[in-house]
Length: 128
Image (cartoon, rainbow, N blue to C red; front, top):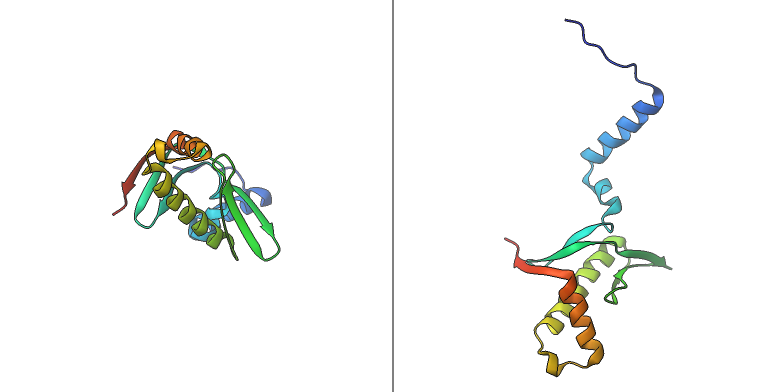
């Protein structure tokens, strides 16, 4: 039985070739890693977020910055990967400091940050 197929135009060929390249090369899959983030992984822990967030990415001189303005957390590094790792580290450290401290031991701004973090993070679990 003959197969019916559409003729492939050069544009469709290039588009297909590029999408296959993305699948084969995992580095290109991270091009939009800062969009619709649903979890943050750091040192064996997973911070599952209640809703997807978009991280802000910027570059100033030789440094890359990744942050989330809502909670005022930002990481930096000489590459975007280093900045993402720094962001995860700062996020985790901030969570450890804020989430484990009783409200009556926190100042006003820290209590506000705790509320924002609690509203953002649905659960924290260990990653095997």
